[in-house]
Length: 62
Image (tube, rainbow, N blue to C red):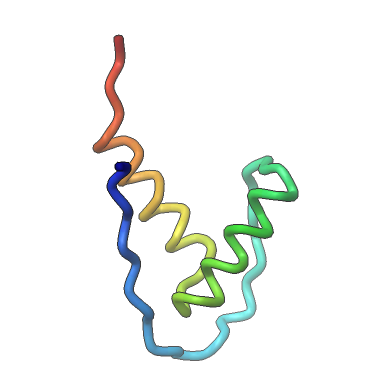
């Protein structure tokens, strides 16, 4: 069984108007990220940082 990363919902604070996204990501991944963003009330930027931190902390080099 794989461990799951639990991301709690965040209260909406309003949109800041920025849409800058400078990483090349597959369309399918962006769709999943958008769905997760909507479900958690977190920005893609916040989620990418959460997910990257989790991945880095749980990575092993062999």
